[in-house]
Image (cartoon, rainbow, N blue to C red; front, side, top):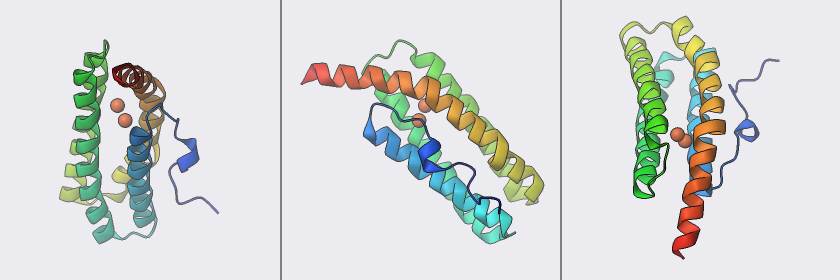
Length: 141
Ligand SMILES: [Fe+2]
Ligand SMILES: [Fe+2]
């Protein structure tokens, strides 16, 4: 049987800061909930979880942006820009969902576009950023 999860929690690359890992795991849980609702053709549940997803992602990116600025992370703009572009695509995709409720369109994003982006972004930007910030925080102690 095909898994209802777009990714398993243990597939998420781990970063140096636990708080970031927790946020990444929580976001995956929301997306897996959406995927289960997609497989059940439950448009009401999908819409509810999509609202959570938007809010969670906004908070997730804002927090990382804030930490990068606070600790003067050298590649701040590069990382922030990936957040900006990802947020734009997420907002566009979810706005289309709320307008048309097209399951095929949403599932292509949820099952393919997003997991690929997520793994790539975390294993590059977040891993490096988290290592840098953790080191800076340790120095402060
Ligand atoms: Fe992140
Ligand atoms: Fe990030």
